[in-house]
Every structure is written in structure tokens, then in C-alpha cells.
Image (cartoon, rainbow, N blue to C red; front, side, top):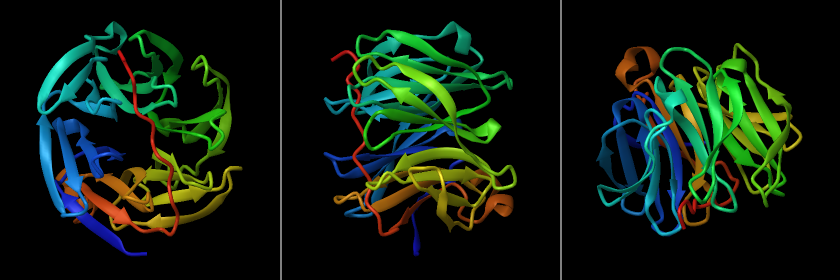
Length: 286
């Protein structure tokens, strides 16, 4: 498969690629440098659209604004270069860290993970549409990639430091996650499981930090294949393009290109011969 480099901002921690289905553009963040970017694949034009507190994850709101999940548990609505509303000013328990990876559910809620800058465990929260925040899981090594199964009855959740992708039973009506169990235990010599998504057949695609690849699993958890990259830190993956048949992947290590690869920190595109599924919009405060 051809690996295309679409933009190289030497991201220290490129993350959270997300396809905007209305604009037909790809957004992504460089967490550690507090930057957010946008790409128009039709023209090849890309630009930096945000600089500020670290954005560990974001969603698109149904009204077109962005919901930014930032340092210290801060959550804000953002549009056209301006913060338009604070949803959560700060979470006291997250004062030593930031959000890391988020996902909107079919009803417009958002599940959001955190990690600390001190090495203490992170947590997984659920942000309801009315702004209420609920702690779901505590004691997480490093909250990472999430996705819903094709039937929307289960949700995957990655703990990178424990080399495991969990699965929960998911109640769409209430947003409850129950019956947490191991789904995929990844090899410790193959890099840390990071961001993830699913395709139209229900297969899982899991990026590998320090693993030089993205790994494909069947819906029953069996490895089917992998795509190898010339950079160490493949951080996240999403499907995009007008037909959702293009895979976009963020990478990290742009400040250490001699160690992590000359294109470390770049945004890649791969046509893997499969189609994805649309991501959900958040509806916080709507």
C-alpha cells in the first residue's frame, strides 16, 4: 500500500485525527505543543487553526463548533478561533494532567480519558449532554483509543500502559458502561496500543506507539494484518474522504526525527481497500 504524507508539522504528539463529514476536511492535534490543524484533501491545503492550552482530544458538535478537551480537565466550546463557552472549568482530580483521547457516542455524549504528567493513574469520564460529568473507570495506566462495535451494543477502550484493549457492554439509552473485560491483549514487544477505530465490517484498527504500525483485528479479536510505517510512533487512525475509504493516521516524535524517523510527526493517508463508518457528533449543551 502507498503511504502518503499529507502534512508534516513535526508534531511532538500528533493525535486525534477526525473527519468532518460536512466540511469534508480532516482535523488533528499536536497535543504537547498546543496546536490544532485542518486539511482539505481536495486541494491539499492545510493550516494551523489553533494555538493554546493542550488539546488532548476534541469532537465536532452538531452545530459545527468544536468541543475541546484540554489541560486540567478543562472543556470548552470553540469556533472560528474563539472560545465561545466553558463547559467544565477544571476537574480538581485532573489538576496534574490533561485529557487524552475522547469519543462522542450515538446520543451526543462524550467519553473522555485522562492522563497525568506525574505518572499517576488516569481516569475515564462520561460527559452527558447537560454537562454533567461522571467518573466511569479509575486507575487507568494511560487512557487511549475508543470505538463502538458495529451493533452499538459494546464499546472498546484502550489502556496503553497495560497493553490491553477492553470491551464494555454499552447502554445507548443511559450511556452506562458495564461488565469491563479484556478483549485484546497486545504483545509487549510490539509497541503500545494507542488510538483506534473500526471499519464498515466491524474490524478494529489499532495504532502502535513505538511499534511502527497499525494493526487490524477481526471483530472477534483475532489479528488479521498490519500496515508498517517508517516512523516509530503511530498514534491514531480514522477513516475519512467523501466515501470514508481513506485511512488517515497521525504520528509523533517530530522533535526526534533522527531517532523516530524522518517523517515522524507527519499526517499520513493510506488507501487500505476498506471503508470506515461515520463518527458521531457531540451534542453537549444542545
